[in-house]
Image (cartoon, rainbow, N blue to C red; front, side):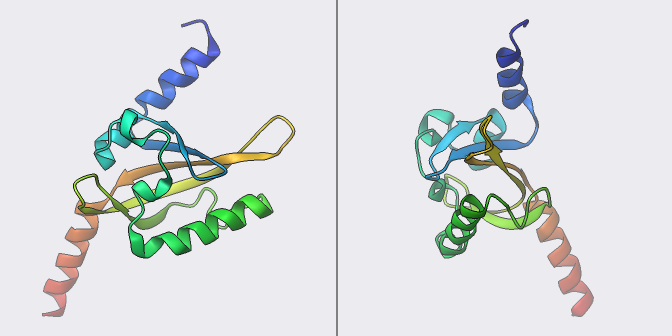
Length: 137
């Protein structure tokens, strides 16, 4: 694997966390194997789709407000900080996921899109809630 772009593609495909890259319009351009495992959509169903594919309806307005603000300002409030949020699985099931976000820029520094890394934390959140409920009863 002497070609750096082959290595980059291999890294993206093989990392344990879901990696999703979307362009400025919110269209999914990169979707790795872990994204398929997490969200249930194979790459051929996710690529070219809008991010709304995995954003629960009640969170879409807030998501797009933040997305547009980040593109306009070139800065993200949440950059690099893991954020707990909800996401949709292909089955319709709602997941708790922890995500980190970053803006992606071209060589001139212009924002090209956004990349997110995500992992499923549904079991952990449900365990914590059950423990808290047991404590309070």
